[in-house]
Image (cartoon, rainbow, N blue to C red; front, side, top):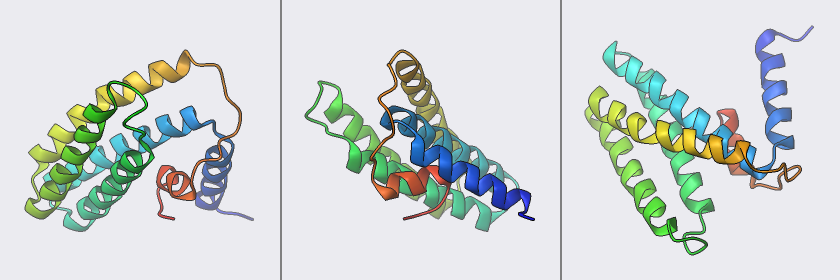
Length: 145
């Protein structure tokens, strides 16, 4: 009989593999916020390893978001690309310095972005299953490709 963790992983895999590109984007942002919350808590409680793991995963997600971004597709693209670059730099700094305040500042930037994407996706008709890159799916699931 599968364990709850195995069942949860199977569900997450199915959810990500059948998600529309828009839903996958929201899943990535949701996981990014979760990683930042976990990292900040770990930094504040002295759990250096847990903070490191979550910050590295957050960096992976931001990198994936940056790589997937077509900055020329819309007027705000270059600004979002610059924001992703800034976020990566800040996440590395937060990890190296073990600074919970830097992690919190990153989270405070990401949460409104996540909420805006969530709102935009809610107003967008479903586009069917995504053919997104495996790395994006793995990042949304909490792993790496």
